[in-house]
Length: 312
Image (cartoon, rainbow, N blue to C red; front, top):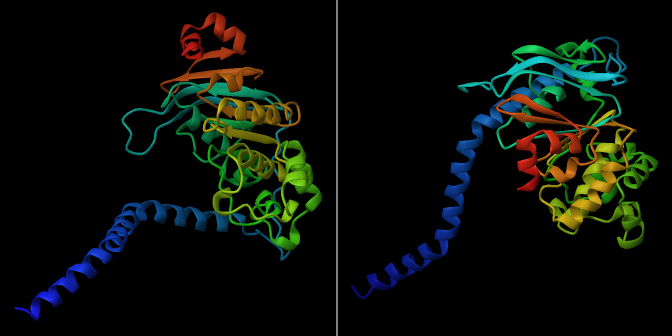
């Protein structure tokens, strides 16, 4: 017994030290099993995109169709969409028009359909009924990639890699192909040029850290805006882009967005009505339907639910 007790103590000590690592390993395994279905779908989507991007003829490697740039208006015409296995449609008979180079807002409570409506515009979802048109041309599989080439997207949480400011703005572009003048111009328009030039130790070559930990929330969002602007999109989408910021930081980021008005078509998805106060037009959605449309002041005066949201 005297010989067994030390051995058992050693095993108990080792087990206690190994327990956190084992728990983390089991957590990772459970997470991997939970996400394998989503990973499989993403893999199929990426394979489909690779085929769609492959040149149809010749050896130049260029995409045959030119970008589908918005010049006049984009529209949803009696569009409906139901997610797989859902009991009711997320979007039902939705019609709206967005003039080119205007700023519009999509507002509504969670689940109202505002993000789904914009995903349909982006071509991430395909309508089950109705159609999305760009300058009167229906969005189809044959012009989907040319359309998406002209889009810029700024999400709520910006992913920044542990790399330089320049490479994060030109994210996805090979280092030897980065146009530094385009990077600088995008930074100017995103209101972060002066900060990079004056405050960062290595300016454009400053490494921002994993997920941009060396930057503030507002600076990360401005980098995200600059990234979207680098490719000179005709349409910019801001998907709850300032909802994680405090009011003061949000105001600064919104000034950068407002300064883009008239240059690009701007779509703002937001539950904070303060971010769409200066929009040319606002679409209020509820249960997948448009229940209000107009300027901020018009909706505030005429629409009780919008007024309730503004006061809450």
